[in-house]
Length: 218
Ligand SMILES: CC(C)(COP(=O)(O)OP(=O)(O)OC[C@H]1O[C@@H](n2cnc3c(N)ncnc32)[C@H](O)[C@@H]1OP(=O)(O)O)[C@@H](O)C(=O)NCCC(=O)NCCS
Image 1 (cartoon, protein in one colour):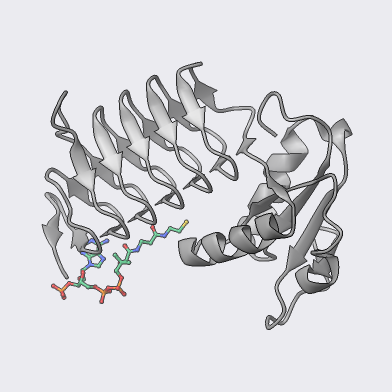
Image 2: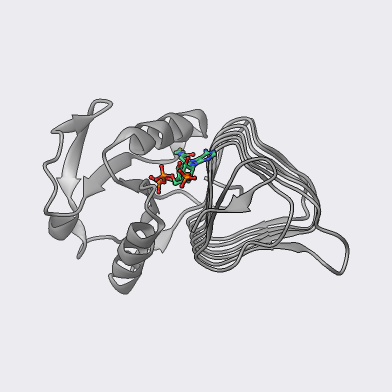
C-alpha cells in the first residue's frame, strides 16, 4: 500500500483481469504486511479462486471488515463508486495502491482507493482523486488534477495543466495536450476519450471524442 498505511488485510473487490493485476501489484509491495483477500458482489458467477486465493462473497463478509483496507478492482467507475460507498458504510477503509516502480514526487496527492500501476511517472503538483485507476505506463505531468473515479487506461500521456473530471475514461494510448497555466485543458465529468486519441481542446461532460486531433463523436 502507499507509504504510511499501517498493517491490515487488503481486500481486493473483483475477480477478473484487473483483480489479477492488482494481486500482482500487491505481491510487489511489502508482502509481510498482511493477508490479501478477494471478494465479489452477489449476482456474479464467481471463479472459485483467483491466482490461488479463494473468492469470498462480499455479502458474507461486509459486516466483518475490521482491520481491512480495500480497493475495487473493477474498470466500470460507477461500480467502483457503488461498491466503495457500500464498503465505507460498513466501516471499511480504502487503501491506495502504488506500484513500487512508479516514479512520483512528494508533490503528488493520492486519494484513498486510488491505484497506480507499474511503470507510471507522475511529476509534481498533481492531485489524484479517490478511487482513480491509473493503469500501467501512464505519464502525468505537472499541474494535473484527476477527478474521483476517473480511469487512465495503459499508456495515457497527460501534458501539464490538465483537469480530468470525475468518472472520465481515457482510452489506451491517448494523449491530452494544450493545457496552459491559468487555462487548463478540461476533460468533462463522465467523458470518454477513445484509445489513441490526441485531445487538443476541452471535452464537455459526458461527451465521447476520438481521433488525432480528437473530434466529438457523441
Ligand atoms: C471510445 C470507445 C469507448 C467507443 O466505443 P463504442 O461506444 O463502442 O463506439 P463505436 O465503436 O460505436 O464508435 C463510435 C465512433 O467512434 C469511432 N471510434 C471508436 N473508437 C475509436 C478510436 N479509438 N479511434 C478513432 N475512432 C474511434 C468509430 O469509428 C465510430 O466512428 P463513426 O461514428 O464515425 O463511424 C472505444 O472505441 C475505445 O476506444 N475504448 C477504449 C478502450 C480502452 O482503452 N480500454 C482500456 C481498458 S484497460
